[in-house]
Length: 263
Length: 272
Image (cartoon, rainbow over all chains, first blue to last red; front, side):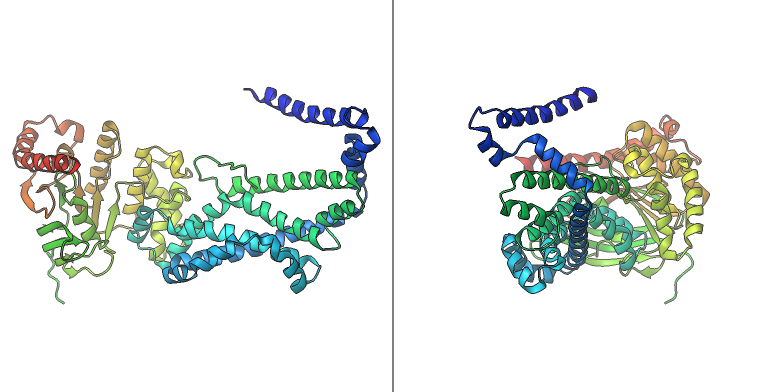
């Protein structure tokens, strides 16, 4: 299929959805319009609200908070994941001893931690960063751990025969191998950092996109909730595009740029 | 210790290598006595699974012999063999480095400055015919080109001994001949001791000064040692047509054939 046709079809699906939504809420087909509009709002109202929000100044403050939380959660989570992934992969005993605890911690649904983090770190950004951290850390940790352990034995033997010492092996072999695995999970981990931020805000905060959506929900402002979701989607797509750009630059040496549609 | 000026580059004495526990382990090679003189090109041939690579890995220090001695230029080998370069059968380049970076990194242990290392790496890539490919990543190159990079990576360190484990095995017939001639050209410039493992007897004769034949495993031994007196410089494609080549081939094949059949029969037995 050529690209033009594909884009046309993609646009058609979007327009079709909007049209269906419009027809069902503008005419009393399933129920009186007053009722359907209360529960589902209308596409025109939602788009108008999105436009109003984006042209006002208030939303940018919320976006900035959410972005800050996402970036911090990712930075700390990835940093910790890389550090411990390396450590555990190079120290068999550590990995063996901590294995059941790491599995248990990873199996825990992180949402239940949100109220505890709010208690510990307050309602500011740090409780959201903590929640995002617990999500990102494990993804990066497992990937780096795997990456370091699965370095090709031939590449390693060759590097050692070239006379590289431990420090040089770390720099030229283990580190790039671990980074590869980390970047292959970049979309997922950035996505989870954002999930941590938004869920944290949703459960208790005074700023951010999650807070905006929660605020609209608490007064049954369906238009506001949908508008918040649309803005969140745009935000996610922009961040994801940015991640893809970084990935392309850093993984030029890879045969085919993988685009795993996660995150 | 006093090292005589004519100490062999690689000397294996009564060496055995057993994998797994001492009792019930798998003995790959046994009673190996082999000496490679400086400047000598030795090819090691034998049936599949006879432990040819094991011999090479022991000389490289990648494997520790279970018994016997390994001496490198008169000194007992401890740890990795820092005076040897190793060319692997599989792709051993770092996939995240360009050809230039892969070759230049080999000079880092010597403490060569970055700029100097890159300049020398460029020169070596030119010598192996890859001047136009310095910025390619391994996946952008053909199998033969990757082998050229690996060759440059090994030779830039100027090792005194070259260990090669079926390096041209994965390449097609034409590329093998081209690579063989390239290797001979580079080797002729400053003859180093070479241990070249191959399963291809024609390749072994065409390249080497001496062909060592190993028996079928387990507990493989050296069962033949044949000098190759063909004149150098040689052209691999043409030398195969010489009558002297056929004569040597016939002689070595007579001893190799029995072992190949033995290994084949074992393979049949194992898979039955």
